[in-house]
Picture 1 (cartoon, rainbow, N blue to C red):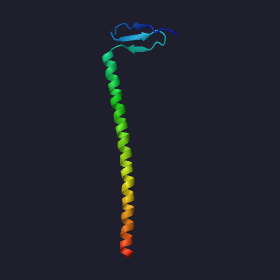
Picture 2 (cartoon, rainbow, N blue to C red):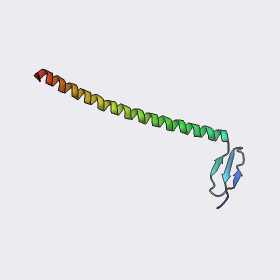
Picture 3 (tube, helix red, strand yellow):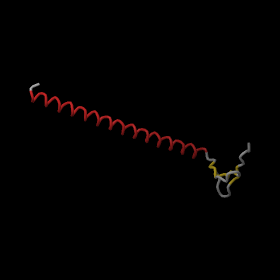
Length: 81
């Protein structure tokens, strides 16, 4: 198992370069925490929107069922059944 070696990037206080993958790594913990929080908020908003969409769909189905029941009821009342 190889050990990551991070080399400082010239001109950037919080950036390091992984010597193995050549990836840039931001070592600013505050920025990292803020990015994680933003991602969590976006995920929560997506989940909330999905749940609301499902609820609206269920309500539409229930309203359709109610309309059908009312139509059947009025038809039976008109016929005198």
